[in-house]
Amino acid sequence: KAGVTQTPRYLIKTRGQQVTLSCSPISGHRSVSWYQQTPGQGLQFLFEYFSETQRNKGNFPGRFSGRQFSNSRSEMNVSTLELGDSALYLCASRSEGGYTFGSGTRLTVV
Amino acid sequence: GENVEQHPSTLSVQEGDSAVIKCTYSDSASNYFPWYKQELGKRPQLIIDIRSNVGEKKDQRIAVTLNKTAKHFSLHITETQPEDSAVYFCAASYSGYSTLTFGKGTMLLVSP
Image (cartoon, rainbow over all chains, first blue to last red; front, top):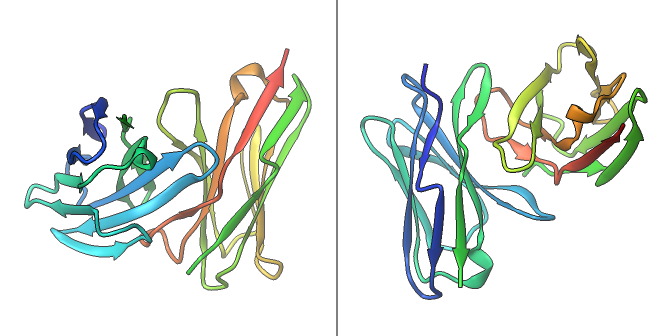
């Protein structure tokens, strides 16, 4: 079956702009989690959605937001981009077998 | 909330040697401990996991041990090969369905 699909793969934005990233989980999976990965900081939890509801949120500023649609696809949005937001953003689809990650979106803020 | 510490941050071994990566966690309620391998430019992939009702689990050359009393768990890779070179992440959660908290990762370098 198809894996976790994240789009776009790469993105370059200017400081102050906003960006929207998309994630489609494995078919039938209703839980989607988002993580930010930066060198030296590992994977930091952003938020988790289950059946269109945000179930948990990490320690990120309000500029980071997300949502989930009825088909389980999820989007995350970052407003007023800062240089420090440059990172690999990973989403993960969950089942009882654990997380399956997508390939990520590499965001560069210039 | 949960906090996971992972050591070492970098580990270099010769092909054929064993490698051990250690993690400690803070929340005694955590009972699910997966390990992920991330090769350069690729996504993290689950390689093995353990639940708190067992103390050790093996899968070919890799094994994970768990000490709930001390709140630490370890990944053991035997007979390392160059293709084992990657970043390894440990994680912990209350259950297989709750949020995973990750360690900061260990870069394993296996020299031929």
